[in-house]
Length: 296
Image 1 (cartoon, rainbow, N blue to C red):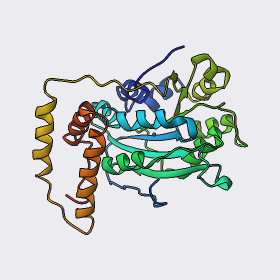
Image 2 (tube, rainbow, N blue to C red; image 1 turned 30 degrees about the horizontal axis):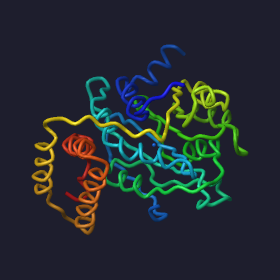
Image 3 (cartoon, rainbow, N blue to C red; image 1 turned 60 degrees about the horizontal axis):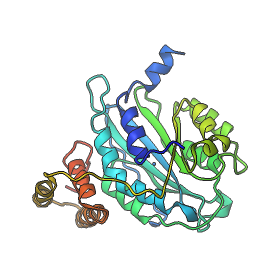
Image 4 (tube, one colour; image 1 turned 180 degrees about the vertical axis):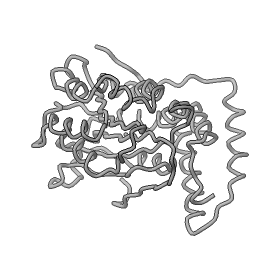
């Protein structure tokens, strides 16, 4: 069995090194809140990294959701180093959950939790809102829905990625994963698959084929393995600086107080895992990807 403790970090870290080259390479060669959907429309000429996280929230996936929560800030920090022709791409993340009995059966037991957003606090809040309950896991359906619903755009330099994670056969449901893969090709979106279980079982369940059809990557993980964070002698100092940083924000507008409270809440959520995770969030807050111009 091949297992990777930090699937999202590893896969996104590798892909971020060629942030604007995905389409260029192809030409050269020929990841519960209310039902509100929030989308940030930052007008910019910069290239963008657009990432849709599709997470299985059926009964056995508590470990997967915990890993996603614990690794969000490391993902952001990895992607902050991405370059596209000497430009630093902006990052937008969307989130879907699927395979949960609490979700609408007519819609395929899936839900768009968050449309593409560059509000990292909102993304963190959305992750922490997820709960699990047994259900039917339709991979082809959720991939196709994300491709249809989200605004992927048509800029050639954008890097467009889907990460889907789950533990049931990739073939379940009435929507063929092959049909979804064809649509991903049309939109220049790469689908990366993460099977929660034995590596070969994931292959026999067609998770690898789902990735191969869009030139994506396939990995298998033990979703119940605790995420390991390595402590640093600088952790306490960085957390002190986070407290000072928080005092520099000047909230304005009708969302100001609400957004400041959300920021503090996500600080606490990060710390709830361990100190190292809170440090990763602090680093993210000091990076160019921490967007809060709508309220600060």
